[in-house]
Length: 242
Image (cartoon, rainbow, N blue to C red; front, side, top):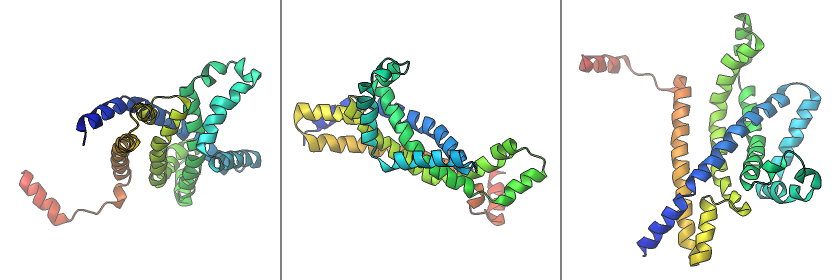
């Protein structure tokens, strides 16, 4: 085994980790905001908004992300109206096309996850907030949204992990993130298996850290699910500390 080759390949691909994390974090953050809007549109009771959100979710969940990236980066540039618009400085950049495509795609999935979390909030909690004199916005901010986040976090965590892996598609539009650098190394060395194994290990390490952070967040947000500490254990612990 040529460990020098493995190490040099790892160092080369590690240079693409910041771009991978930047793409993933941007898409997750922007996608979460758009997903909340979509979820509220679905639950608004206004038929027009509901159907707009339904069509959006249907289109972006029903078409491949790779196709969406191609349409944004290669397809829109064919229209003169786009090339001469104020959006062209953004749409001509592969980074922003990748971020926009990832954001639009993850928002379709996350919107349904957040909607499920909002629907899981017991109606009695909302009625209790009204009885305390809270406005609709205050009850949503202090009661409904925290409870919905707790319920939606496991599902949304899976979507975050999927987004980290989906950033590999950005290499198709010339972005040199981890997979883009891996493809460049394969073209130079013709050692595809070793390089892809190293690239897979990098994604695995990133997602391992992400899953630990999600578990920590879930632990902090669900104190009511923890096993209560026995009174004898508490007394014994206090005795040791004193």
